Length: 355
Ligand code: CP
Image 1 (cartoon, helix red, strand yellow):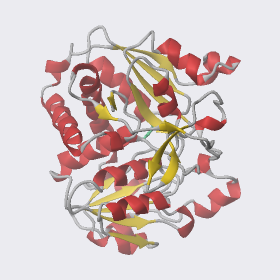
Image 2 (image 1 turned 120 degrees about the vertical axis):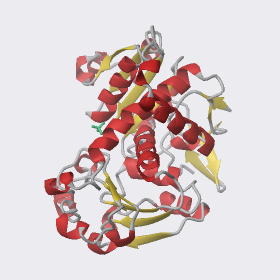
Image 3 (image 1 turned 90 degrees about the horizontal axis):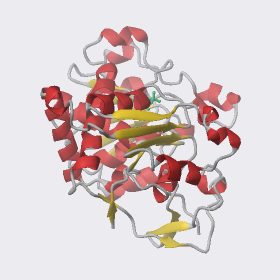
C-alpha cells in the first residue's frame, strides 16, 4: 500500500531520501527556478505544540515556492478550545488546503490525522515519538557538509529516551551502509529498546557511552540534543538530568577538526555559546538547510506522481493500546489499528506493543 503522507521516515526508501536530497540541492542552487512552483497551493500548519523552526521553515518553504499558508500555532485560539476533536478539525482543514503539516504533543496524532484527510499529511512531531522532517533536515545537512550519508561515525548525545529527533535520525541513517553510532546519555535517558532492535536488525555497530569528553574523540558528526523538560513526570526528575552533558570548548578540543556539530534546536544549556563561533558548529546553518529540505518535500508530495510513500499492512485488533501517551487514549473513536512485528501486535499510531 502507498500514499502521500509522511508520518514516519520508515515510509521513505533510501532512493526516495536520496531523491529529496538531490531536489533540495537543486533548489539551493537555483531558487528562482522554483519561485512559482506552487502558485495557487495552500499549506495548512496545525501546531498544537510550540515551534520556531519547523513551523516557520514550512511556512517559508511554501511562500518561497509561490504558495500560501493558513493555520494556527496555538490551538486555544482555534475551535479545539471548544472541544473540537482531531477528526473534525482535519476533515474541515483538508477541504481548505492542499497539504497539512501538523505537530501535536500526543504520540500517533499525525497518523490519526492522515485517516481523516483528503490531502497529504506531514508529521512535524508527535510527542516523544517521531519527527521525520527534522531528520530530512539533518540528512540534507550531512550530505551537503560531509558529502556522504554512509560510513560515518555518529555520536548522539542528551535525551535519547524522549528525543524524537534522535529516534528518527538513527532509524534513517542505520539504513545506509557502514554507519556506526555512539549513544551518549545517562542510563535513565538511554534510547528505547526498539531503537537498539533497529540498529541490530540493520547490522550497525553501536557503543553506549556516559562520557561526552571521551566519546567525542573519533566522530564524524556529534548530534547534541536538549533534555526534554516537558516529557518528564516531575521537575525533580528533570533537575537530576539537566546539564549532565554540556559541550564546551574543553571537550571540543578532543574532537577532530572535520567533525561537525549538529543540534535540532532549541538549545538550552547543552552547548555553550562560545562554541557557536567554531567552524564545526553547524546548527544554525542546519536550520536553513531544513527549509530547503521542506521545499523539496512539498514539491515531491504535491507534484511528483511517482513519489508515493509506503504504508504498513494493518488490521483491527481485539486489544486497545494502553500507552498513556498514545492519541487513541484521548480520541476514542479511532479504530484499533495495529500491525504485526516479530509475531507481536503493535499499535499503528504510537508503535508500542499492544497484545
Ligand atoms: N527542531 C525543531 O523541531 O525545532 P522547533 O521545535 O523550533 O520546531
